[in-house]
Image (cartoon, rainbow, N blue to C red):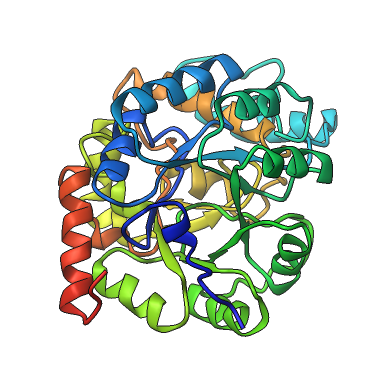
Length: 358
């Protein structure tokens, strides 16, 4: 049976609440505000260079003395397929034409995996954040051992019992149980493997019964009542992402914020058409086009993301935001706009009103 093992107490984090990493949305200001309010903030560095990662971590530390989490991507490097990539670009050609730019002649693998090279590992060993978390899989054993020896605690995303077992066997400190409701990328280790698409509640209950590690619930949680429900189901804590997008400290642009506060937030989709891996976002023109019957498979992750980002950048100059990756979970209609510290305080008050006194 799972136990919290005092995971949050060991980190000196007051509340059993984690702000999800959210690459491209989480900023040093957001992470620090969450940490200063008594929760665990998370900074994603997988979408940037080591130099950018160093700067973001330094900026966060300048704003808070509290512990925070640094998240990395551990995906298998892209399987490059010239024919598949050409077919995907040909499928997107009408959208590029509408955006007023030529179809790219080639696409790039824009996000390297943490499992490639050692530069990111050396950075983390030097800077020693309190927590490092992994998405899309795990690093090799030697990298995990180095992080452990540096006194860094670790978390990893699981979407299945099999992934959770691998995480536990690897000596990770906590499992993030990501339900299918969650916004952003599903953390599956192998995107070609069968995916049961379990809800957060079902996955959480299974892992609590079968794992000795603390399990963090993620997916569809937007308020203190949701956090309390996850804790009642055996979670050691809850991770919220979409709930923090509307905080002024996040990097979400005006179009993202407007969409999340509109009726469109009721319509989220799991799609690979934006990045090449399944991710949940608010339905838009690119998702509709990429997922239409008869569409070719997208280029592999993160190569397809290069196409989507180029398309969005061009269209956005003309005020068209229908190609943007507005990642959001199924709880998106419950999003609230308030400063991060106020949101943490509100979530804690709601937990207390539900019977929890952290």
